[in-house]
Image (cartoon, rainbow, N blue to C red; front, top):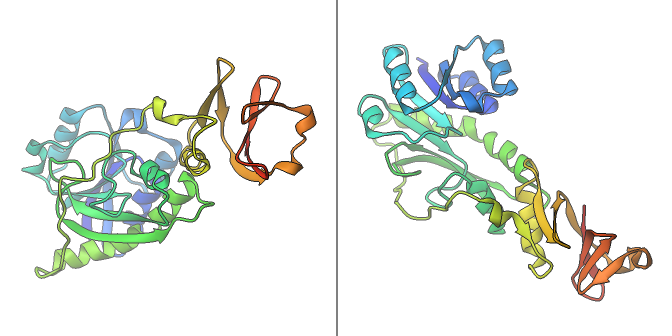
Length: 275
């Protein structure tokens, strides 16, 4: 017997992973109006899943109450509204969180995972409580986090584990003795703000590389140079003797072309090539 669920969020792949799983069926999608995107709309039209747009917590509570009796529980991923106790008293909600809980809690967990220089990343499914990413952990999986993977590849590879999380959720629901994992109220990381997305000529190379990796699907990082913010979207380590230094200007360890920074010298052999 399939579990009928409402999906809360804006990620189309997660929605379809749930809907196509042999043990689950998505009866409706609830998404914030400002987070609606073409991929999610396309998924809902292909699968003929009703999509409900909301603006706030009151809208969410109202829509869940209206749908009562048509779904068994809610599965959430990439949903920006905090769930309050009044909803949890009436509805069971499970959250898919892109980290190996209880590590890296918070909205921007993949950012902190990349910045931490981790060799692997995790994704977890837990029961929602009023605490941020707290609640009983039902399943968690890991994937390799290779140096060449930016935020886009990280998300894609993590989402491929969603069917495995769902299989574990189904086992949990059918087995009263299913072993779960203890969560806690620690390891929370605050949301990323713009001040954290600046690089400098004296930052460690790994921090610059990881910062750029973390922002590949956003608007890049910033390099404040010559009183101007320059957008940096790609960076790699290159041999200094391959750089056309005669056509560039070197100011301390920053290589520039006109007023635009194009590199940061690391030592007498290598430099960070910026673009």
